[in-house]
Image 1 (cartoon, helix red, strand yellow):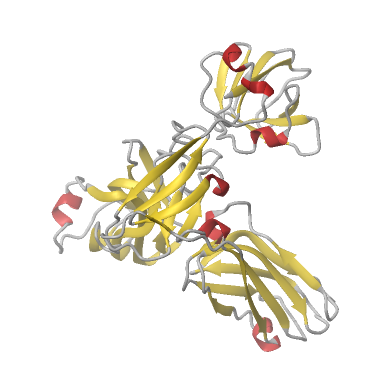
Image 2: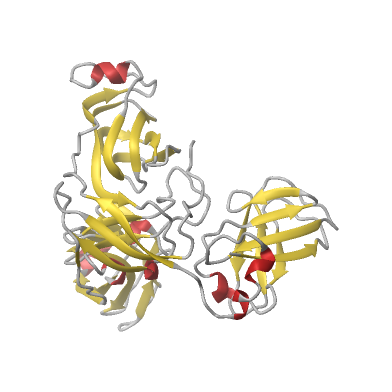
Amino acid sequence: MFDNVTFSLASAVAGSGTVTVGYPTGRSQGDYHWAPGKHKLAVNGNIYSAPADFTLTFNANASDITLTNASGAAWPASASCRLQIDRPGEEDRRVDSVADKDRVRQIPSQVALLNLGSPNVADVNGIVESQDLTAAGVFSVDVTAAAAIAAAALVGTLDVPRNIVAAWTTTAVLTVTGTDEYGNVLVESSASGAVMTGKKAFKTVTGISTSANITGLTVGTGDVIGLPVAVGKAGQVLGTLKNGVKVANTEGKVFLQDHMLEAAIDAGTALELVSPVAGRISKVTTIARGTITTGGGITVEINTVAVTGLSVTVADGAAAGEVDSDTPAAETATAVVAAGDRIEVIPAAAFNASADIFVIVEIDTTESAGGGSLVVAVGTEATATTGDVRGTFAPTDACDGDDGYMLMVALTNPTNKGVAQFAG
């Protein structure tokens, strides 16, 4: 469904500029909370699409929406604009056909079973065995897959749409190209380093490149399974079925508590923890056990990957008992943790602690209720490093080629395949 707002620009809006637009009559932030974000904007007859050309921020406790110009073109003063705002529900065929439904506080939705199949055992070198690869794209030719790779004819077809994992020697950025289950080209790049645990769901892999010469490259599959339709909120998932049996929900929070010794803090040595559950790190809290001479930031990594937006700041001169905390970026995939994952709580090297610091790591298992971890669909414009455009699910148990999984989901738009894939 969608709502329409017409307005004129009081002044020109340059690239990255903003303009405020009033909510449609009777609407507020909550009406658009689950919307997939496929908004449209007409400016003097030119049509723009979100999130590539513009974005919307639905302000709480306010009467307006912030519209940000990302099109690269300036919108002139006095331009006539029509904003079509996407909201939960099936796509409208005619604006006037839903007039009566608009008077009822209901969101039409369809309960569906998303079939994730019986994913094979993850294979860390199932796509590329140990290879050398240069920045010019030249592979070594000493293993079975080399002939196809050297001929630029690499095609790795995966059993189900799932994430890519890779490892190599020498610091570099690895880029994987392929297609999703609908045949759309997608591209994913690692961070600079020597490992990659992908977040996007590939159905085929058609190319691999590197930013620097590397050796010992292996490329294969992980246990993160792609969804066939965009799921924008964890609350849409009503349950998980494993081999046709609904898995019991275990919603709640788990708290890991430990303390960093003064000497370790001063040396920048990480506190090492192991997650006992699958879930999402939702908060980290620190408590000074004495006066902190020189403070700093405390960050968190899961399996050596930093949790985006999570950094607890302990102030210089913080007194004994001072409590500080921080939460990660909203719905970031980097906060997702599986049972047995390594969690590192890392103090900045600048610390002169003069006291121990007590640490509490909060893990929310709500999104993991029902036997796995859900990462919702990316709602912003996709890039080489963002998550999957439809969302992913990682079963708690390792994939074995036998167990089959389904998600029971309330879909407000069963045809929504998410924002456009990043194709390079």
